[in-house]
Length: 164
Image (cartoon, rainbow, N blue to C red; front, side, top):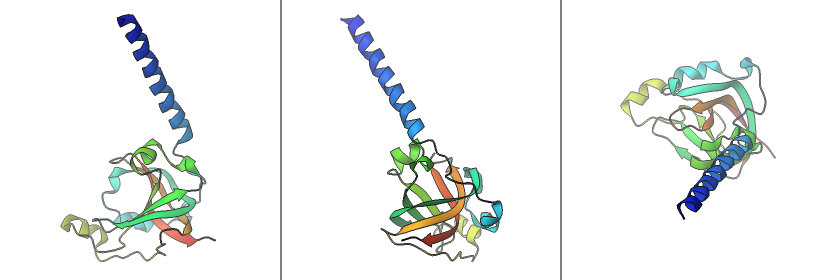
């Protein structure tokens, strides 16, 4: 009986490993295109809250998709949940912890609530077209991994353009 349980446990472990490998191939976390650095506003990095937590994958890219959520964050950023057309921009953390959405962050959208966060925006407000839930958009900005959450983001956003 214990030998049978051992085989069953080994088979279960093999199945779990296979699922993880398949998921990593399905969601590799790659930028769809590489744009010139000049296509993104590098000055925005001066106002990013704790920029060291963001690992830059691509300095400037564009992603298209449908807006599925928006919320105001305490650091002054507007968080947009994007259902991307190209799922390859997602990684496993996006799928498991961010509802299969790409996190898009418009910095200094509103006044931060934390006193240590107010210094980053310092009266700076970045004016960008703010979409509504259901809108199709093209987002341009830095493609990063948020080390604290493990998911990929467009952060900071340089531009949001409406699509038809």
